[in-house]
Image (cartoon, rainbow, N blue to C red; front, side, top):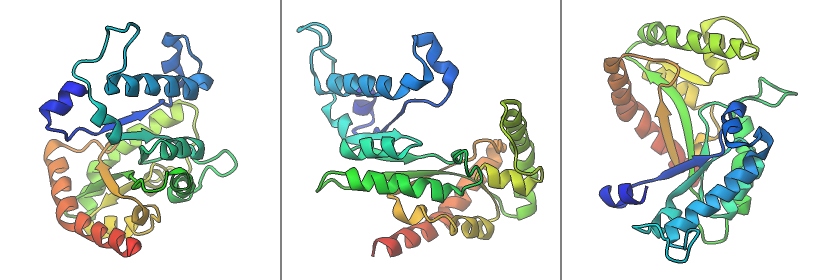
Length: 246
């Protein structure tokens, strides 16, 4: 990361998270319940190394040191507690493109889940530190609704099959049901703008990223989606966020 930031002339941003797959912790001798403590310890060691502190021996230091990277850390979390820790440390907050609802309300809307995380983050942020909040969202935009749905259906149904195979319940079998459950915004620019307009998180964030994950379009369709987002979605989003901040 330190070398890459030099090659990128200070443009590198670092996103970190504890991970959400229980089996991933077992090879390291950890349980899923230990993830928060392990993440905190490893994050502390990483930041210490970037600062140039000694590593296990007084003569061992990271070369090159990269203290500037500590100002460009983003923390991914599903919990208000994690968001508060990120805020207290002055890091950025990364919000996922989709997130499971609580057991008592599995159909809870994504913005209803994530607004409390933003509240906790802002409440913990030290005075004078500018907030950095990124919302990731799934969006596949095409020139027509029909083409967008046709391209998106195979990938999103495959994800639904994997989701069901992992023991989770689907709330409906129609294509629109699956889009809604996985928070996927699919369609022409007008339809995607209308869907994003319902997301009360977006006016509160400083950054928005889009991905086509789970839709699996072709390279050409992905490039066209990027063009349409840049030309017809991003300018509208800038207006939306500027109105909120004013």
